[in-house]
Structures are given as C-alpha cells and as structure tokens.
Image (cartoon, rainbow, N blue to C red; front, side, top):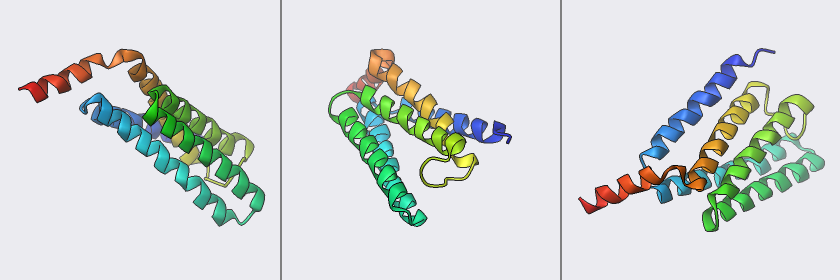
Length: 145
C-alpha cells in the first residue's frame, strides 16, 4: 500500500488548521481544538453502530468516551490533555490500519488522521508549554488598539 498521498494530506490539513489557529487568541485556539476532539470522539459510537457488532460498539464507545474526557480535561485544566487525546486518536487510527482494530475506516482515511493528529498533538503540546506567547500578546495588542 502506498500511503504517501494520505500522509501528505494529513500534514497539509494539520498545517492549514495550525495557520488558522495561530491567528486566533490562545484561548479561542484551545477551544477550537478541544471542540474538534470532542466532536471527533462522538463519531466513534456512530461508526461502530454501522458495523453491527457489540464488541466493536463497546470498544469504539470506550475509546470515544476516553477521548471526550481528555478533551474536557484539556478545556478545564491543561491543553496538554488535548494533545494526549490527539496522540491517542492517532494511535487508535494506526491500529485500524495495521491491526484491523475497531470499525473499518478504510485504508487512506486513518493514515490522514494519524498524520493530522500527531502534527496537531505536537502543536498543542508546544502551545501548552508556552510556545505561543507571541500569539497571545498579538491578540492583546489588537484589543488594546
């Protein structure tokens, strides 16, 4: 299987989202990524229903609930929880491709997700570690003007 195109698609999608988020105040950018992960976690239940297998439904529901809980923790306490959620989501999608775990998501879509998720996870960890201090200052300067 050739994963070059889906891999590149995931990188491009992540970089576009990062470029958009970088223009937002830090709090709004964090809210965007937390909401994105919370919405993503909701799809697990639906994709498992389509399979019609109670074991898959249970596994996907547990994974979805864990990702949702991490997104909430990211919203309430630290964006590092959201970074962990994106890292875990990418790992779960890698399990779809390599091990056939969970609902069938095809071959290309999980590769896009793994790449997107891990790039975003790195960005969020950097952001949570204070790497975006200039972004918050720029947003503060715009409000003061």
